[in-house]
Image (tube, rainbow, N blue to C red; front, side):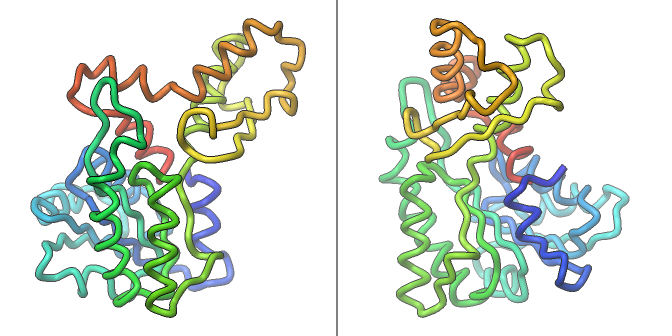
Length: 247
């Protein structure tokens, strides 16, 4: 299922063939994301890039019987990986560990995202660029500044992927209400870090929640990622659900 952001990236007015590049394809998010994109019938050319291991991911995913071509690239071939891309998804970066916030990742992930943004601006300046790398609140502005410095910035083509907050909100609301999460439509505005995540529960069908339940629900939506980081015991963060959000 396409997220709203990804759906906008695949313009209905454009040709039916789309090249999608995943930068960070060998990571915890990149691998399941690559599989989900291989299953998407709108994707006809899937380009997988990483510092190492991307050709292996590509070989594995390429055996899935859908009508798309998959190729894996290492740093020496980043130009080929990006050239002609309609959509670029960037999940590259280090994951959170217990006790860390998304903001703690900035010092490491900022330079990774900056370098990938430079390559994207050089080799695919007209692509829709979707940023998954945390902290999204900070990495999106970095990409914007890189594209501005290259003279190729288009605010309509740069997105921070925060769809995971919407997925969590729908799931957590359904657990309390005893409903099917597929039928829950919860609008979430703001950023993708703690209290900047604002679920608009007043716009749902569950306006009668008592204050304690509502406040607990909001807190869980805002900090739901911590549950996953803790449960994985330092082995990673929310990768599978994030891949679904990014696909």
